[in-house]
Image (cartoon, rainbow, N blue to C red; front, top):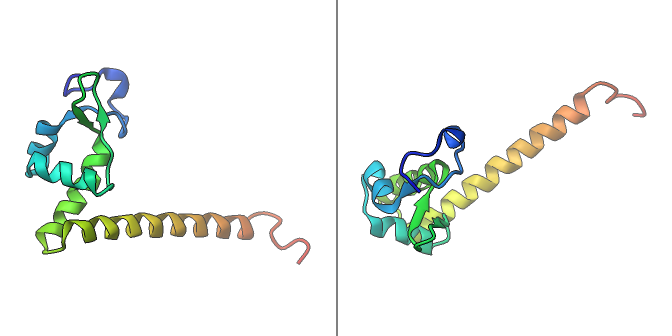
Amino acid sequence: MPDNPPAGHLDDDDYPAYTMGRAADLLGTTPAFLRAVGEAGLITPLRSEGGHRRYSRRQLRVAARARELVDQGTPIEAACRIIGLEDRLGEALRDNEELRRRLDGPGAGAGR
């Protein structure tokens, strides 16, 4: 897989377009850091046919957030837990908003 995704994948945040070296360069970190966030279960890179790790833009954003926390002094395991909790909170807030829209939508007052 090339570092530049085929035209059909240009808008796909989940397309594993980046090699470990390129991903580390983009994040300004080391391949060891990417391996560490993978081992902590924060991101799971795809593997190429040759067994090499490949990262998507979405995974790079998550790894960048982890690096931000680690740079602030947070241990990597704690940073990974924080990001997991942030993701869960975001999902819960989106679910709440969807439920509010349903309850406040057309016909919501009927039967009350």
